[in-house]
Image (cartoon, rainbow, N blue to C red):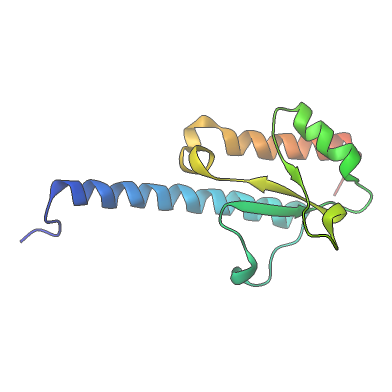
Length: 124
């Protein structure tokens, strides 16, 4: 007796396991970024799967940080929540950026954000 009725089902499961592993890798890196620079959601129900909202460190403004990130070749977006829109920015991690780690999107994003923060005078 086999676990899979058809070879296609086996391939689908293996593909899903690969995506789950890569997704977990992305979450680990995003969590590192949060802990290292910003705040971590206290409850998983408040966390997004395809987008991460990062608070600006004290003394760093959107007008100085976001253009530097964009200049580094990474697209991020400002905050949307009307009460705190100027306090955070958004980083998307979807589609091939989240499922194909070989393309280097995630690593580049983290390096550019860190370098941009440093250019803005941020230090730990």
